[in-house]
Length: 167
Image (tube, rainbow, N blue to C red):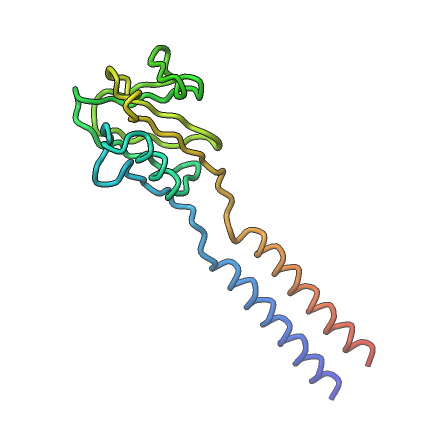
């Protein structure tokens, strides 16, 4: 009877541990990069709403490292320059970090933190064609859960073995 009880306890605990680990491993993580179309269907333009349109759009999106910003514009009518915060605030078009003049443009967010973009065409930035975003460093959402559920399964297994040995 004791050996059959031990067998049942060990089998149940191993199945439980396997189930917990499998469930945690199958957890979905949003590791695929998202493509964000800047200002959606309007594209990268001087918006009639000015800078508020870009602030509202940025606030309604979440940006992670690896995501792509898609600036949809016509070559010769706009460009997109990544600039410092100071250049963004002052609409200073000299010495951008990078500039892309052939539209449309995909820019991959390569670091966490704040990123600033402006159009360098005359008056476009001062009329509100500028975008500020904050990118998060992406951490797999299931990582902590996987560690804690594995620990839980090991603890349950150990407890069941201890209960058996004490009887």
